[in-house]
Length: 339
Length: 135
Image 1 (cartoon, each protein chain N blue to C red):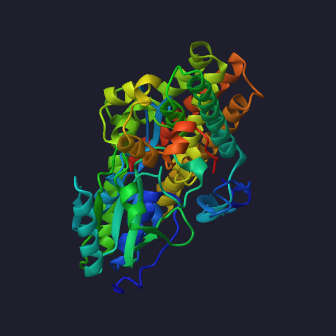
Image 2: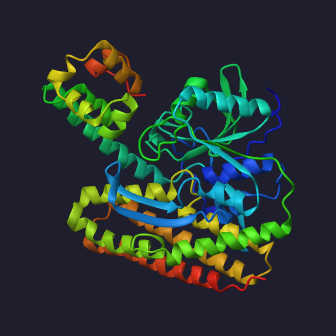
Image 3: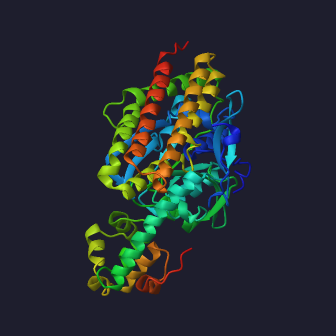
């Protein structure tokens, strides 16, 4: 099985946009980049689900539902996608082995808890991580994990364990890959970029309910101001630590994916000559910076340097300020006249 | 974030691999840059694990006092809840809840103990004694 020996591993900020780029480049779509995959896949989001707890803390996400980036990017570019889940571990391995033998590089959804090459501190029960298996040698699968700077490998037991991780969003052995096809034209890219932006505008501005998109950021900002009274200082600190981990931890590119989206808009400008895209990209840079400033404030609280109600108010106000910035940015994006 | 502001505070991940983050040059243009970690993130992980350790210690004491079974300790150590543990062990939640009682745990079959031990990556002896070396 050496058909994939020319597979090129490339590191990325975010696992799913990284896997999407690496899989598509591997089938000859060289113009795909990580920011383009992220933007065409409408990856930017915000949601705070107050009635769900993760590790005893708030359920907050800065990105869209797992799986959307790859699905939407391929769909927008007219690329055929194969995706399969399994109830049997044996069948899951047979299917993967057969695809590898055919020369496919295969994306896998995995849990990070048993992922042996991650440091222990990072191993939580997070089941929406993505990696590519591109070859098999003996009992070892060769793995391209976009978080790592070099390819790595997993034994069949180790791979089975992470493919069949349990808990929320259990991957159930899920694999996906793209079919080799005609080259993607610039016109297709333009169309896909436009579509990705429109969908992201909808997700951030018009999604119903108070907990998602811009309204979700405002909602969270208001909630944070009550956390000190409601939860007590120690638990409120743990909640803020969880917020910061979701925002900055491996796989976001910094600033809760806002920098990644800013980079996308700049690359979009190479396809659509709207100078608005560059200007709005700068707003996302500001927003990312503000998210990071708020993270420093949060760290002050969870490290015990800060802790007054005024400190929590400042923290909440950062989110309200961010919401106003991003609202403007998405409204401006929605006003672009595409030709 | 400006390129020169990309933090380089060595994290436990930073010892294995750098992380990609997107940052701007003087003209505001983005490129992918490398970071070795950021203190703010390292501290967020630290306080999270300090909390886990606290819960582990409480569970260990309770297990030594025979108030809960060692499973409680390993559940905290593995950052699991009853639902996650039950699905890894291939059991119903109510079964795991029962096994958290020392009297029930002490009567578990070897087969079941081995299953739990595999889930926690420990030996059966370690499972019973809670004498594990932290990696």
